[in-house]
Image (cartoon, rainbow, N blue to C red; front, side, top):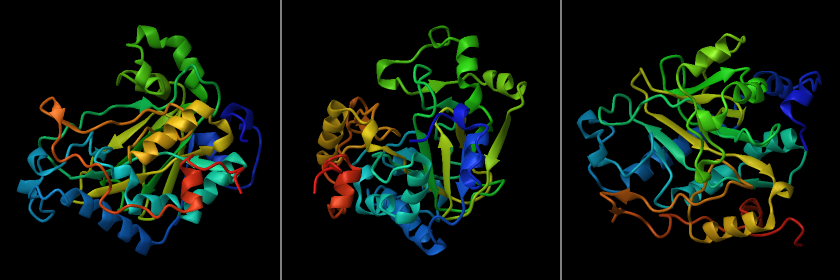
Length: 323
């Protein structure tokens, strides 16, 4: 299994892992073909339209909450979205799995039941407030999770995309010594592996040599970043509708029996979880509207995945030790 980022700082691999351990992230160019990226993009856009709320991608007047299913900052985490057939197709792509196998040193991996993002440029009633954060608790030591983002649309300088504080991961422990979480607002039990930064915290990292960068990528590229890296979304300034799928893998051996059992239960309920595949596993629950369960909520995906042994092992439903 990969040691912590700090332990790898002086080690050379001669491949993309050197950039990952130095900067806290890496871009895997052309992880899937442009044609496959277009397929997954069409699936995400089609899924958002499947609620028949009048959304027209060619008519910006329909780019409002009234024409969209519930989402959190353009991320779709409810309505069984995490378990649509196309989501499991993406998670099963060998070229998506291979970098995580290389990073962790094992092919026995679990995958997150994560969602996807469709961001409509200029949506006036959306919550686009910046929310710089990390997805790892300061109570965890070293590299514990490496998140993945499969990019499906052009993400150049003016397009929507991912902002990362390059070099912030090695300063993770130092930051929380200077700013103890309990004095900075703390974290709820359900958000154990999440910490939201104040915008003024960004200057603390920049004063120590870090720089906030927009990660520019093409359709089919995969971004992998250490969960201790400060990050958040950059909103589109162009007319390009952003579409990405979040995919994270960690070693199955890290999962505790109770967590894996709970993960399997959520899988059978077609429920999404967090970015974490092996722990910090809690269901996203039902989409809510006006204090009640959204009547548009679904009990199963529009297209169910074919439950192969490979998928069942990635989901934690079937053990790798099983023949």
